[in-house]
Length: 415
Image (cartoon, rainbow, N blue to C red):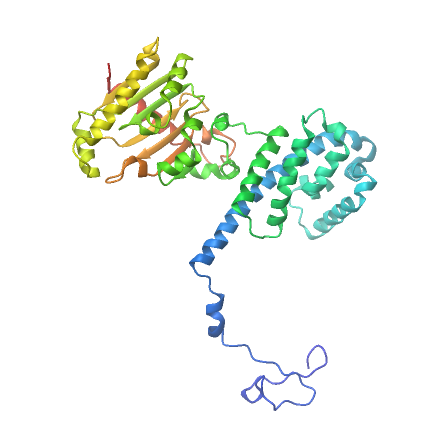
């Protein structure tokens, strides 16, 4: 007998779901189809897996940005409005701040808080308050209602509202687990970074002015030492991180490699000249174009004899012309080494906490333009993302900086 008072047929072979031999008043139940018949329809092919992973990656990045913004906005609202309302209203200060216009959504937040208490969803006592249950639009409403209180701390109300408007589309898409386009994700990241800057929560990493700190890097960067980006080749590196962003406004550039094309062919010699004249320092270490090592490299790459050495000579001559225009040639040094080249490295402001490095290993039969690229941020492991139970073993940046200094000491100057 079923829960509705109807008799269910027996499950033996004589009473199949499509059998007509069913007792009066019984409900006919069709047997499930063979699992093998529907299995292929549930399978995801490679394209489907790629699509869902892309969706998850974009949604994850967007969620991290939204989480950072919401936490910062919540802290700002609490810091400004709590001293105004708490002395009179106590723990109900958020309800009082919402006022008659916000009674509906603030009461909904109160109800959700009570349910979370009852079901044990409040894992941190610090979240046991109504403010923790307000959404971004509700936090924005509190700011708008009390703008005179926030005006001394936030310069432009329009900037805050425009950024929150741009985030609203992303917030709705992520909260409902729908597809997020790359364009909308990029817009959300820009809006989040701008809003955090306006609210006084910009990155405290010194090199962020040259290479912005990615939200994901800021949270899980300790998993990858001080590597903040990996590119499959130099073309993709320059697309994401142009030479102007890398070398512009630098006070020091130390470069080691065969021909240093990333610097010599992608950054203006006039800019290097102005950098040196302004008190900066440039040290360039080329592979000796007359060495046996460069001949071996030509054989590895399968190019004509002398082709690579002539290219290196042209780069050195170009840098010598730049150096010749300086009143203090000591600020622009050029040297050559004769050892087998193992990697190319560009260390920008490598003597300070704001240093950035671009490193490529030399691969057999692969030109430097086509080799994988690592981007390193100096001092990454010394920051706030390292877990308390992990030892700071340092990153890769000091390793390449030390190697440059050793190679520099063993090399010869170019007159």
